[in-house]
Image 1 (cartoon, rainbow, N blue to C red):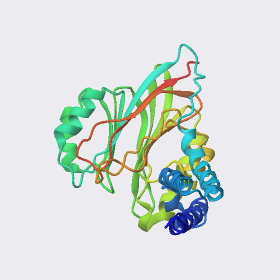
Image 2 (cartoon, rainbow, N blue to C red):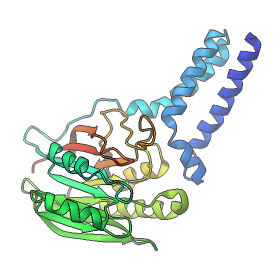
Image 3 (cartoon, rainbow, N blue to C red):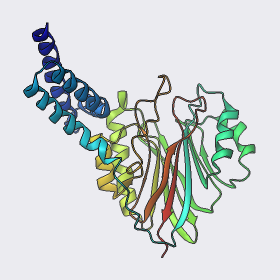
Length: 310
């Protein structure tokens, strides 16, 4: 019996090792990138297999399992490391609330409106907004006088208490996927805000990757601090998310606050973090957390940032 159990868990470890290796090759194939999204669960599986191998006295194989746990865990642990605040004592603060409201299927208007009122954010970004949703929400957003909305092609909206200039909707690809680019005045300093929702990559992976590359280019070329937020349809362990951070000169605000999965609410607990807020080096993160369930398949994400004062 012991030998059989050793064989089962050793075989499981070999399979997990192969999946882990493939998950680091996301730049080469979409399937490999999908595996990278499972990094926390590979980490958990490696730990469980290691414990069972120790229980059945397979110490050498257990050492390999622990190594696999570390390989998967090092990226997860990085999200929990303390965040360095280098903005200074007089930094200005800005709060950003983002929600994929799942407008085509969600009719829980009161929950969305309640979340907006409860969080009392400076800037609100909504994706998957429809004309019907906008007709309901617009009268409720009187405290957000600066508004940019595109209810078609997937739907996107940015509402701000802070002044906006040069706000516009940009479309990407053949399906005209919309994103909003606007300069927002944060305590006497203009900030470039990009609110995006790249297409789901299951059928359009090249289009999603292409838009992320364009966003990174625009973020790096901006002559002012940058906030990028939205449902980016990739996790922090995706190669294309890494490339977005690197090429856009951006930092993931989730770092320092732990893993915060926001999708999908089809499960008892959300499994993946695909809703993100990234910021340029002029920002530090005060808080980052998920909001309440609002009837969508996504949880809201709230980020409180500090902006370096000139």
